[in-house]
Length: 197
Ligand SMILES: C[S@@+](CC[C@H](N)C(=O)[O-])C[C@H]1O[C@@H](n2cnc3c(N)ncnc32)[C@H](O)[C@@H]1O
Image 1 (cartoon, protein in one colour):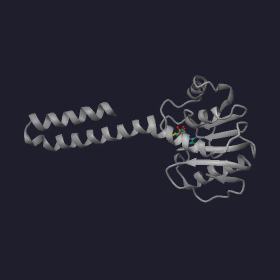
Image 2 (tube, protein in one colour):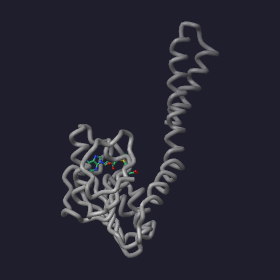
Image 3 (cartoon, helix red, strand yellow):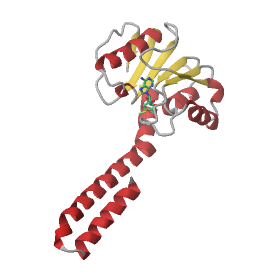
């Protein structure tokens, strides 16, 4: 996106300076498109490099973990929260579940996430499952805490998102903790066994 944006912006500038006025419309369109790409690319880079890490640390710091819990990361992707949670669980376990959409995260796969866990030295405390957050393959009350970071909004239907949250509640132990960080407000659902953060 950086490269495309830069090429479009420079192309637009060249058109403005060296061509006939009949190309001005195209030149301004190119400049606008290029500027938008550059701004978006900068925001995405800053978000990946700094924003997400800050958000991850803030979310995990608010969970009250002893270190022996079992934590699930719903829609774990490459393991941003999953791996950081595993580091906080020297005697516990972090479980990820994802259906590995490459549209929502590039190079998304169970192997990539397990490789990241190994690189971060927590492979023995991380397991990853293939599955849909609306129908998770886990028994009731399996987890002490549940995380979902920018994952639930990817379920298109409102009912689907409700179902995902019901699944989180179902698989959480009594008194378990939930940390959901996402684009849209979560619908109100039964939270009898969950304390929300
Ligand atoms: C934007 S990524 C976020 C990944 C990770 N939580 C993070 O913060 O880096 C959204 C993830 O949710 C997953 N996802 C989307 N719909 C899902 C579903 N119905 N069940 C499980 N995972 C899903 C995608 O495959 C993707 O890995």
